[in-house]
Length: 211
Image (cartoon, rainbow, N blue to C red; front, side, top):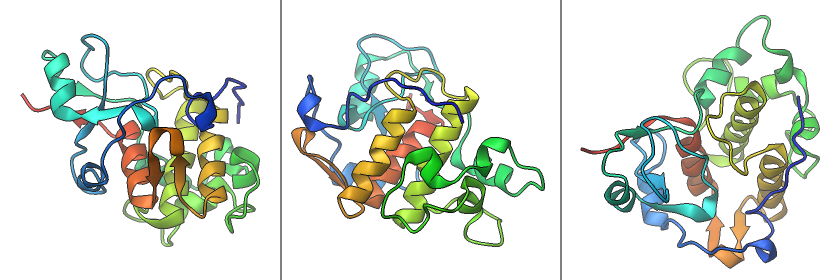
């Protein structure tokens, strides 16, 4: 697994230089598993369909605001592979070598009971490995973070922006250090698994904008 030593600009609240209005809990719940996401990144100008810089948690705005500022945009997608893609890879008899490292080796050691399990083992849960990834709880959050890191490593993120391995490690560390909640006080963010997974799915699943 390649490690990008870049700096995280969203995790330590004291280093935030720009504050954005966070996505409301109600909007995030509507963007949960099985539903079409209703959140998009705010761009300073028009963006091409199906591409966008990956958006940090504090930079979400409503789809209506995004559409009004990007009237010609038809769709948007941060990554070209989903978490379900990596679940399918984990089920192969010979999965990618990047999936054979442990969770702690990739994301750092935490209080998680998944520390010593390989990425492949985590992505295969629950057994048998059929259907889609988990979309709730610590396992769901971890599976989506692993998938995002694997996308980054394999070059499947179209415009990473500040997203690098250090950034993803910071999300996991923040989450576990705060009792399985992602907290950015300076941005008024205090998210449980439902909100975190909705955000991570936004980063990895295609979004079609209303006409």
